[in-house]
Amino acid sequence: MVQRNRTMANLDWISILLWLVIMVFGWMNIYSANIMEADGSMFDLSQRFGKQLIWIGASLVLAMLLLALDAKFYIYFSYFLYVILLGVLLGVLIFGREINGAKSWFVIGGFQLQPSEFAKPITALALANLLSSHNYNLKRFWHLVKAGAIIMVPPMLIILQPDLGSVLVYSAFILVLFREGFSASIMMMLAALALLFFTTLLLDKALILLLLVVASLIIYMVASRSFKKGVGNAVWIAGIFGLFYGINYLLQTEFSLFMLGLASLLPVSMVVVVKGFRLREYVRMKILAGLIISIVFIISVDFAMNNVLKPHQQHRIYVTLGLEDDPQGVGYNVNQSKIAIGSGGFSGKGYLNGTQTKLHFVPEQSTDFIFCTVGEEWGFLGTTFVILLYAGLFLRLIKLAERQRSSFSRIFGYGFISILLIHFIVNIGMTIGLLPVIGIPLPFFSYGGSSLWAFTMFLFIFLRLDASRLELLR
Image (cartoon, rainbow, N blue to C red):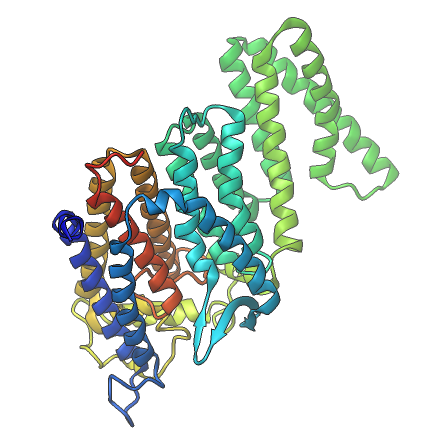
């Protein structure tokens, strides 16, 4: 009893209050998006808002159960829960029900349970356990590999369902690794690859290759402080390319400019490697390695877009980037969402008075596109209120994470913050047309029991750890 009283006294009630406000306001908008004039009862369990009330009530019970457990339970059983999770993810591939083209759900009675949502907090627990273990150092190669394996195994199983949106969420864990000592140079490289990804979709591959070669030569000139060497290498590459281009023209072969460029770089690369080892000129070799990684990445992006992603996923990305215009197809949801948000103006049309909402012009309006309901009925003021609620929660969670004495608690806290952040950015980004539609709910706000429960697990495990921050956890 004493321990329970101490836990309740140490709980961060500001975070709990923000959680409750977001959850209740989310339910109000789910109600508005699904209310039928024939039956206005908010307890109608045949409607989504009725089911969401059950999920909210269940999440309150779940929160109390999570707080009742000893904080050390989450450390000692994190790997055990992780193994069970992998078994469940395998099980859903065999016994799950396919809905909307993805075999991601267990159906129990009239309710659906999505294991991939619960994979996020459990993966964060296992990662926190690993990174907080004695003498663990992310700058050691095999330690980094172990952390990468913990993060990557669940999404490798989830992508088989397939559920691309849930898979992309796991990229958020890179922020956790960075906070715990991951190399800043590698972070910069990953950011450069992200930029290269969008560039690959927007520009011709031959032009990108030319830009990469020019950038590599400039970097080499700056690093070696030799303008003459840089120009010499440029002339050499251009000469070999001209030779291959002439042969291609005379023989009337069908090699693309990109393939000719790669062929031109091959002999140059071989010379760079030989000279680099012989003269111990490792700067050249590092620049060459960066160029090769970039080229391989371009080829892999092109392959994935044409052979891995489904046609509707490709179109969503192209429509978002402005490469295609399909207002009645894959762009329909986003166009209708932007119309709904724009029509709300400054103060909105009034609660339960949204015409786009009432006439169901926006598909999935209570799940992935719930934010447009806020925009239409509550206007700029309402959307700002929602964003400020999440901003307050983020700031509060960061403060809690930074005050932890236990590295396990801090790492798990940042795992929660990272996953919450990417959900928030991507959901609102795709609702207003800035990001592709990949089916990610707005945490605590969108309709769905699995998402609500999973994020409730995230929050209250972290709050339980924070309540025991003065104890020696690890």
